[in-house]
Length: 333
Image (cartoon, rainbow, N blue to C red; front, side, top):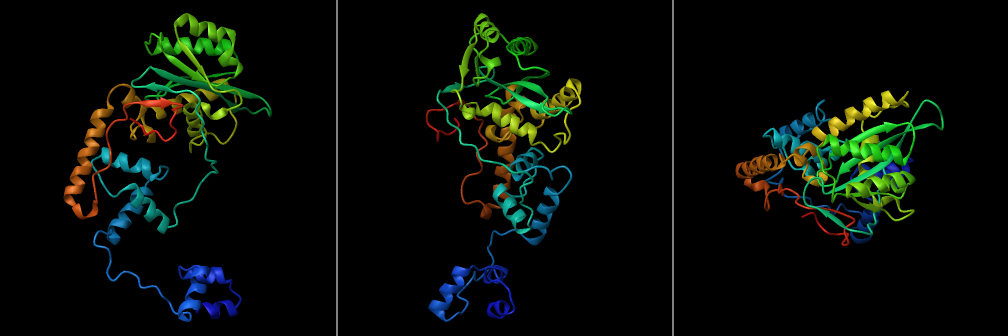
Protein backbone atom coordinates (compact mmCIF):
# COMPACT_ATOMS: atom_id res chain seq x y z
CA UNK A 1 0.00 0.00 0.00
CA UNK A 2 2.79 2.40 0.87
CA UNK A 3 4.75 1.58 -2.30
CA UNK A 4 1.63 2.15 -4.38
CA UNK A 5 1.03 5.50 -2.70
CA UNK A 6 4.63 6.58 -3.31
CA UNK A 7 4.42 5.56 -6.98
CA UNK A 8 1.31 7.70 -7.26
CA UNK A 9 3.21 10.73 -6.04
CA UNK A 10 2.75 10.68 -2.24
CA UNK A 11 5.65 11.43 0.08
CA UNK A 12 6.97 8.42 1.96
CA UNK A 13 6.79 10.20 5.32
CA UNK A 14 3.14 11.13 4.85
CA UNK A 15 2.18 7.69 3.58
CA UNK A 16 3.82 6.02 6.58
CA UNK A 17 2.21 8.51 8.96
CA UNK A 18 -1.24 7.58 7.64
CA UNK A 19 -0.63 4.06 8.96
CA UNK A 20 0.87 5.21 12.24
CA UNK A 21 4.45 4.43 11.16
CA UNK A 22 7.68 6.31 10.54
CA UNK A 23 10.20 6.23 7.70
CA UNK A 24 12.80 4.60 10.00
CA UNK A 25 10.38 1.81 10.94
CA UNK A 26 9.70 1.01 7.27
CA UNK A 27 13.43 0.83 6.48
CA UNK A 28 14.05 -1.44 9.49
CA UNK A 29 11.25 -3.82 8.50
CA UNK A 30 12.46 -4.01 4.89
CA UNK A 31 16.01 -4.79 5.99
CA UNK A 32 15.04 -7.44 8.55
CA UNK A 33 11.78 -8.98 7.34
CA UNK A 34 11.47 -8.17 3.69
CA UNK A 35 8.95 -5.45 4.31
CA UNK A 36 6.48 -7.41 6.45
CA UNK A 37 4.47 -5.62 9.14
CA UNK A 38 6.15 -6.62 12.41
CA UNK A 39 3.63 -5.01 14.73
CA UNK A 40 2.09 -7.57 17.07
CA UNK A 41 -0.14 -5.27 19.10
CA UNK A 42 -1.96 -6.21 22.30
CA UNK A 43 -3.75 -9.54 22.46
CA UNK A 44 -6.66 -8.05 24.37
CA UNK A 45 -7.87 -4.56 25.24
CA UNK A 46 -6.57 -3.15 28.57
CA UNK A 47 -8.75 -4.15 31.50
CA UNK A 48 -8.64 -0.69 33.02
CA UNK A 49 -9.33 1.22 29.80
CA UNK A 50 -12.14 3.72 29.53
CA UNK A 51 -15.29 2.70 27.72
CA UNK A 52 -16.38 4.62 24.62
CA UNK A 53 -19.25 6.20 26.57
CA UNK A 54 -16.83 7.39 29.26
CA UNK A 55 -14.55 8.97 26.66
CA UNK A 56 -17.53 10.64 25.04
CA UNK A 57 -18.61 12.10 28.38
CA UNK A 58 -15.12 13.47 29.01
CA UNK A 59 -15.10 15.16 25.60
CA UNK A 60 -18.52 16.66 26.29
CA UNK A 61 -17.46 17.97 29.72
CA UNK A 62 -14.19 19.58 28.61
CA UNK A 63 -15.98 21.26 25.68
CA UNK A 64 -18.87 22.54 27.78
CA UNK A 65 -19.14 26.35 28.22
CA UNK A 66 -18.03 26.04 31.85
CA UNK A 67 -14.74 24.28 31.10
CA UNK A 68 -13.81 24.89 27.46
CA UNK A 69 -11.38 27.72 28.29
CA UNK A 70 -9.63 25.72 31.02
CA UNK A 71 -6.88 23.12 30.92
CA UNK A 72 -7.32 19.60 32.36
CA UNK A 73 -5.15 20.72 35.29
CA UNK A 74 -7.87 23.22 36.17
CA UNK A 75 -10.85 21.02 35.23
CA UNK A 76 -9.96 18.00 37.38
CA UNK A 77 -9.79 19.82 40.76
CA UNK A 78 -12.89 21.86 39.91
CA UNK A 79 -14.81 18.65 39.29
CA UNK A 80 -13.43 17.21 42.52
CA UNK A 81 -14.83 20.22 44.38
CA UNK A 82 -18.25 19.21 43.02
CA UNK A 83 -17.79 15.59 44.10
CA UNK A 84 -17.15 14.39 40.53
CA UNK A 85 -14.25 12.26 39.29
CA UNK A 86 -14.00 11.50 35.58
CA UNK A 87 -10.32 10.66 35.07
CA UNK A 88 -6.83 11.96 35.77
CA UNK A 89 -5.27 14.94 33.99
CA UNK A 90 -3.03 12.65 31.94
CA UNK A 91 -6.07 10.71 30.74
CA UNK A 92 -7.86 13.92 29.78
CA UNK A 93 -4.79 15.10 27.89
CA UNK A 94 -4.53 11.75 26.10
CA UNK A 95 -8.17 11.82 25.03
CA UNK A 96 -7.91 15.42 23.86
CA UNK A 97 -4.80 14.51 21.90
CA UNK A 98 -6.63 11.61 20.25
CA UNK A 99 -9.45 14.00 19.32
CA UNK A 100 -6.96 16.55 17.94
CA UNK A 101 -8.05 19.12 20.52
CA UNK A 102 -4.62 19.95 21.97
CA UNK A 103 -3.39 23.08 20.23
CA UNK A 104 -1.74 26.25 21.54
CA UNK A 105 -3.92 29.29 21.10
CA UNK A 106 -0.99 31.60 21.72
CA UNK A 107 2.75 31.37 21.44
CA UNK A 108 4.54 30.87 24.74
CA UNK A 109 8.22 30.84 25.45
CA UNK A 110 9.33 28.77 28.46
CA UNK A 111 11.16 30.88 30.97
CA UNK A 112 14.43 29.93 32.63
CA UNK A 113 14.50 31.46 36.08
CA UNK A 114 17.61 32.16 38.10
CA UNK A 115 17.23 33.04 41.75
CA UNK A 116 20.17 34.66 43.57
CA UNK A 117 18.61 35.04 47.06
CA UNK A 118 16.22 32.89 49.02
CA UNK A 119 13.24 33.88 51.13
CA UNK A 120 10.68 31.47 52.58
CA UNK A 121 7.05 32.24 53.37
CA UNK A 122 5.17 29.87 55.69
CA UNK A 123 2.01 31.96 55.84
CA UNK A 124 0.32 35.06 54.41
CA UNK A 125 1.83 38.56 54.60
CA UNK A 126 5.40 37.38 55.12
CA UNK A 127 6.81 37.89 51.60
CA UNK A 128 5.27 40.10 48.93
CA UNK A 129 6.35 40.62 45.35
CA UNK A 130 5.52 43.60 43.16
CA UNK A 131 6.18 44.96 39.70
CA UNK A 132 4.88 47.32 37.02
CA UNK A 133 3.67 46.36 33.56
CA UNK A 134 2.66 48.39 30.54
CA UNK A 135 -0.91 48.60 29.27
CA UNK A 136 -1.40 49.89 25.70
CA UNK A 137 -3.54 52.94 24.93
CA UNK A 138 -5.19 54.23 21.76
CA UNK A 139 -2.18 56.50 21.16
CA UNK A 140 0.78 54.64 19.69
CA UNK A 141 3.82 54.83 21.95
CA UNK A 142 1.81 55.99 24.96
CA UNK A 143 1.11 53.55 27.79
CA UNK A 144 -0.62 53.22 31.11
CA UNK A 145 1.16 51.58 34.03
CA UNK A 146 -0.27 48.79 36.17
CA UNK A 147 1.29 48.60 39.67
CA UNK A 148 0.57 45.22 41.27
CA UNK A 149 1.46 43.83 44.70
CA UNK A 150 0.96 40.13 45.51
CA UNK A 151 1.50 37.76 48.44
CA UNK A 152 3.75 34.93 47.24
CA UNK A 153 2.49 32.39 49.82
CA UNK A 154 -1.18 32.66 48.87
CA UNK A 155 -0.64 34.21 45.39
CA UNK A 156 -3.32 36.74 46.34
CA UNK A 157 -3.34 40.14 44.63
CA UNK A 158 -3.04 42.61 47.52
CA UNK A 159 -3.26 45.78 45.42
CA UNK A 160 -3.58 46.58 41.71
CA UNK A 161 -3.79 50.18 40.50
CA UNK A 162 -3.40 51.79 37.08
CA UNK A 163 -1.49 55.10 36.85
CA UNK A 164 -0.61 57.38 33.96
CA UNK A 165 3.02 57.59 35.02
CA UNK A 166 5.78 55.36 36.35
CA UNK A 167 7.09 56.91 39.58
CA UNK A 168 8.35 56.08 43.05
CA UNK A 169 5.69 58.35 44.58
CA UNK A 170 2.84 56.30 43.07
CA UNK A 171 4.50 53.09 44.28
CA UNK A 172 4.93 54.38 47.83
CA UNK A 173 1.32 55.61 48.06
CA UNK A 174 -0.10 52.35 46.70
CA UNK A 175 1.96 50.20 49.07
CA UNK A 176 0.77 52.16 52.09
CA UNK A 177 -2.82 51.97 50.83
CA UNK A 178 -2.48 48.20 50.36
CA UNK A 179 -1.34 47.77 53.96
CA UNK A 180 -4.24 49.87 55.27
CA UNK A 181 -6.85 48.17 53.08
CA UNK A 182 -5.72 44.71 54.21
CA UNK A 183 -5.36 45.67 57.86
CA UNK A 184 -1.67 44.80 57.82
CA UNK A 185 1.15 46.08 59.99
CA UNK A 186 4.01 45.80 57.49
CA UNK A 187 6.90 45.70 59.95
CA UNK A 188 9.12 42.73 59.07
CA UNK A 189 7.43 42.15 55.70
CA UNK A 190 9.84 41.25 52.86
CA UNK A 191 9.00 43.14 49.66
CA UNK A 192 10.68 41.83 46.51
CA UNK A 193 10.93 43.65 43.19
CA UNK A 194 13.24 44.21 40.26
CA UNK A 195 15.71 47.09 39.93
CA UNK A 196 13.46 49.64 38.21
CA UNK A 197 13.51 53.31 39.12
CA UNK A 198 10.17 53.30 41.02
CA UNK A 199 11.36 50.29 43.05
CA UNK A 200 14.67 51.81 44.16
CA UNK A 201 13.62 55.46 44.21
CA UNK A 202 14.31 57.47 47.35
CA UNK A 203 10.62 57.99 48.21
CA UNK A 204 9.84 54.29 48.00
CA UNK A 205 12.91 53.25 49.98
CA UNK A 206 12.25 55.88 52.65
CA UNK A 207 8.66 54.64 52.98
CA UNK A 208 9.80 51.03 53.37
CA UNK A 209 12.42 52.02 55.95
CA UNK A 210 9.90 54.03 57.96
CA UNK A 211 7.42 51.11 57.98
CA UNK A 212 10.05 48.51 58.88
CA UNK A 213 9.78 46.65 55.57
CA UNK A 214 12.75 44.61 54.29
CA UNK A 215 13.36 45.40 50.59
CA UNK A 216 14.67 42.72 48.24
CA UNK A 217 15.77 43.28 44.65
CA UNK A 218 16.52 41.22 41.57
CA UNK A 219 19.96 41.39 40.02
CA UNK A 220 20.44 44.22 37.51
CA UNK A 221 19.60 43.12 33.99
CA UNK A 222 18.00 39.81 35.08
CA UNK A 223 14.27 40.03 34.55
CA UNK A 224 13.34 36.56 35.81
CA UNK A 225 14.64 37.05 39.36
CA UNK A 226 11.09 38.21 40.10
CA UNK A 227 9.17 35.14 38.87
CA UNK A 228 5.97 35.49 40.91
CA UNK A 229 5.07 38.91 39.54
CA UNK A 230 6.19 37.97 36.03
CA UNK A 231 4.00 34.84 36.10
CA UNK A 232 1.04 36.86 37.34
CA UNK A 233 1.44 39.40 34.53
CA UNK A 234 1.59 36.58 32.02
CA UNK A 235 -1.65 35.14 33.39
CA UNK A 236 -3.23 38.60 33.21
CA UNK A 237 -2.25 39.24 29.59
CA UNK A 238 -3.06 35.73 28.36
CA UNK A 239 -6.57 35.65 29.79
CA UNK A 240 -9.19 34.93 27.09
CA UNK A 241 -11.03 38.00 28.40
CA UNK A 242 -8.00 40.30 27.97
CA UNK A 243 -9.12 43.19 25.70
CA UNK A 244 -8.14 42.84 22.08
CA UNK A 245 -8.04 46.60 21.69
CA UNK A 246 -6.02 49.20 23.65
CA UNK A 247 -7.52 50.87 26.70
CA UNK A 248 -9.17 54.24 26.17
CA UNK A 249 -8.18 55.76 29.50
CA UNK A 250 -7.22 55.04 33.12
CA UNK A 251 -10.82 54.43 34.20
CA UNK A 252 -11.34 51.89 31.42
CA UNK A 253 -8.11 50.07 32.35
CA UNK A 254 -8.80 50.14 36.08
CA UNK A 255 -12.28 48.68 35.56
CA UNK A 256 -10.84 45.72 33.67
CA UNK A 257 -8.02 45.24 36.22
CA UNK A 258 -10.55 45.24 39.09
CA UNK A 259 -12.55 42.52 37.36
CA UNK A 260 -9.42 40.46 36.73
CA UNK A 261 -8.30 40.83 40.35
CA UNK A 262 -11.67 39.65 41.64
CA UNK A 263 -11.60 36.61 39.34
CA UNK A 264 -7.96 35.80 40.12
CA UNK A 265 -8.33 36.02 43.90
CA UNK A 266 -11.70 34.31 44.26
CA UNK A 267 -12.02 31.87 41.33
CA UNK A 268 -8.66 31.10 39.73
CA UNK A 269 -7.31 27.70 40.84
CA UNK A 270 -3.55 28.19 41.10
CA UNK A 271 -1.45 25.21 40.01
CA UNK A 272 1.43 25.91 42.45
CA UNK A 273 -0.77 25.76 45.57
CA UNK A 274 -2.71 22.54 44.87
CA UNK A 275 -5.25 24.29 42.65
CA UNK A 276 -7.00 26.35 45.31
CA UNK A 277 -8.04 29.97 44.87
CA UNK A 278 -5.70 32.58 46.41
CA UNK A 279 -8.48 33.94 48.64
CA UNK A 280 -9.23 30.46 49.99
CA UNK A 281 -5.55 29.94 50.85
CA UNK A 282 -4.99 33.46 52.21
CA UNK A 283 -7.97 33.32 54.55
CA UNK A 284 -7.53 29.73 55.77
CA UNK A 285 -10.18 27.86 53.77
CA UNK A 286 -7.84 25.63 51.79
CA UNK A 287 -7.61 22.78 54.33
CA UNK A 288 -11.31 21.98 54.10
CA UNK A 289 -11.26 22.16 50.29
CA UNK A 290 -8.23 19.86 49.94
CA UNK A 291 -9.58 17.40 52.50
CA UNK A 292 -12.82 17.17 50.52
CA UNK A 293 -10.88 16.48 47.30
CA UNK A 294 -8.92 13.77 49.07
CA UNK A 295 -12.20 12.10 50.04
CA UNK A 296 -13.43 12.23 46.44
CA UNK A 297 -10.27 10.50 45.22
CA UNK A 298 -10.39 7.87 47.95
CA UNK A 299 -13.98 7.10 47.00
CA UNK A 300 -13.04 6.86 43.32
CA UNK A 301 -10.21 4.45 44.09
CA UNK A 302 -12.49 2.23 46.19
CA UNK A 303 -15.06 2.21 43.39
CA UNK A 304 -12.55 1.28 40.63
CA UNK A 305 -9.40 -0.08 42.32
CA UNK A 306 -8.13 -1.61 39.07
CA UNK A 307 -7.45 1.88 37.70
CA UNK A 308 -5.11 2.87 40.52
CA UNK A 309 -1.57 1.52 40.62
CA UNK A 310 -0.54 3.39 43.75
CA UNK A 311 -1.59 6.06 46.20
CA UNK A 312 -4.04 8.80 45.31
CA UNK A 313 -3.01 12.26 44.21
CA UNK A 314 -1.30 14.47 46.78
CA UNK A 315 -3.87 16.95 48.08
CA UNK A 316 -1.84 18.06 51.13
CA UNK A 317 -1.50 21.86 51.46
CA UNK A 318 1.75 23.48 50.32
CA UNK A 319 3.23 24.66 53.60
CA UNK A 320 6.20 26.79 52.50
CA UNK A 321 6.73 28.86 49.36
CA UNK A 322 10.28 29.92 48.53
CA UNK A 323 11.42 32.92 46.53
CA UNK A 324 14.69 32.31 44.68
CA UNK A 325 15.49 28.95 46.38
CA UNK A 326 19.16 28.02 46.41
CA UNK A 327 18.30 24.52 45.26
CA UNK A 328 16.49 24.93 41.93
CA UNK A 329 15.00 21.41 42.18
CA UNK A 330 13.69 21.97 45.69
CA UNK A 331 10.10 20.74 45.96
CA UNK A 332 7.35 22.68 47.71
CA UNK A 333 7.08 21.85 51.38
